[in-house]
Length: 141
Image (cartoon, rainbow, N blue to C red; front, side, top):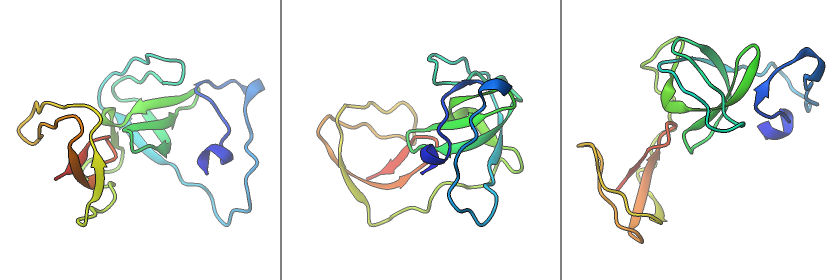
């Protein structure tokens, strides 16, 4: 839906090539969430956006992959969600509510736990996803 409303690509924004989206009937304004970069991130592809610690961005789209499409006054692109915190309240929970019934998945790659709150998984292992966090991590059993 957002891609239809905002047919834009990452990159610099110049007055002469601004895209004015054709919006369907809307009853109110589109409110974008504002975040602050908590660390420097250097883009590695043309669809990404470089941010420096302290940069303030508006989030246009949040993907469950952990990448968010952001815009600043003169640029836009994908940024890893883990580099951003809400501007108003860093402790504010914005992740969807957990689904304790679980959603079945099968792992396509093995993963070895690095932190205490992680679990190692084998390739082809059946798991249940109970919570998809917006930073790209999933809570599974």
